Length: 270
Image 1 (cartoon, rainbow, N blue to C red):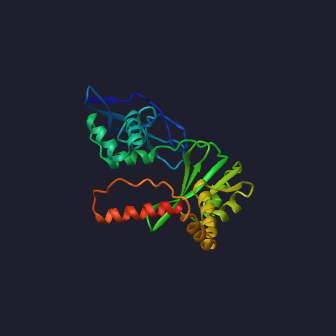
Image 2: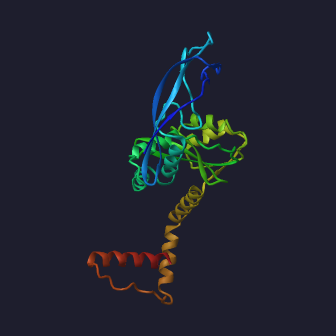
């Protein structure tokens, strides 16, 4: 379905100086894609006017009429078409969003869906008070960045371009309300937090907190290995303990030997 529309406004405001103009220069056509009607595509042929700008100090001598309720300048889709495309892409992503759009009667590629997502305005972020910082890979083994997560809301709030202390410090300096910072043991993150948020308390995240506990325990066990061996020998000659044997392994001799070694290691640990 094709709809031919024409704007009847006799005046328009310059997008640069916002001065009202009534002198029409010419008219031109715009083609817009709108939401489908009864599973059929809808195309708008929209005729709008061009006006002279009468402000001598303005950089723009001729400007095109804007229709902010219908579409954005230079866009080939209506606002409601762009909003639907962005909502589907935000929920499903590029490839899955394009497949759903094809089921609904639209012919958009995954790149179109992703481009629409990249142009969507970011939501307003409330100043966070508890922030977690960690690295992520743009390309594994080659290029890494920093992800900043609001621990109270449980959602990311920023992606930084690298793992440098200066980059993190510059971002943290924008939010003096931060009270708690969690991080790993990277020196760059510690330096960035000291420079950007000296008022915040730094704590280890859950994973590295357990890792900090495991490593000293392993060192202690290595130091007392002879004593542990003596305890093992002494307890081995005492009362027999009940051992639950694993079921027969039908996958071959190598897997059976591996299972036996695991069982011996388990008994040793016990």
